Image (cartoon, rainbow over all chains, first blue to last red; front, side):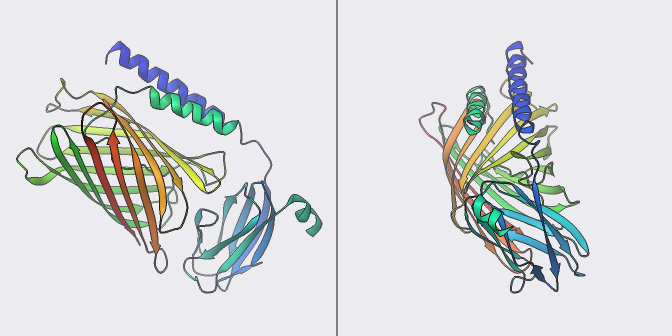
Length: 126
Length: 237
């Protein structure tokens, strides 16, 4: 490998490491958590409120004997929750609005909504 | 400010390797996600027209998630040779590893490992790299930073570099599940290409879904003509 190419690769690696450090530096922030239970192919509660412009972790506890796949084009998330198991998705920061998600294996019953509300509305609801 | 820093860094990486490229530079921009239980069959088609003529490559693949975070895919690659005969050109195994949960960190990370063996020739290629995706509202920026290492007695050391850095980028607007327009950029050895692309998803029952991608990439490397039409059809079940 020529010296020029080695130098090019070294530069790329240095910039890539900067990118990694940049990413990791934004992660040390506490995240709110909300739990949703899957029972008889339904979500409990079927609707949750979260504050706008904030990242939230949603924990799904699947009490059914069959797996479920959480799917949402609105939230841009897909996640499998195995039978009698739990799994999580991270959503946000989002603009205020109503975001639909559903269970791919039971799309007629497993339907839920994430309502993203202003911080004031979210505080009042608490 | 963060977005500006990120884009500045990406811009400097894009501008760096203007000396990149090989014939297969326009392929696919990989997303860093894997779903457990996922299985797929895939057909990938790329037709590149430049001053040297037409190069046609097609790939047939079967993929399966082997764990919650790792997906393996096996490819048969066909190509049209200089005598206009379309035949098996190589075999490939690919592993995609989802390193972080979607949305957990500032960006989502994955890794890609590929090994390809030319059919009836002593020519190998190993590719590895990092896949990054970042959401900006209804848009997503996906980048692939890859290094391909080629070896074997049949490698043409005068025209093929031993190590080829590749960069791929897709900036996608999630408009409707069935139509998501994007801009794609590919760089390789002596190649930089950019062009529009579209993807869409049609869902069926359970995990069954059909994904399609269509892109038209124009080379910016000075040739009077250099276009690649690429198409992907992927059925997940």
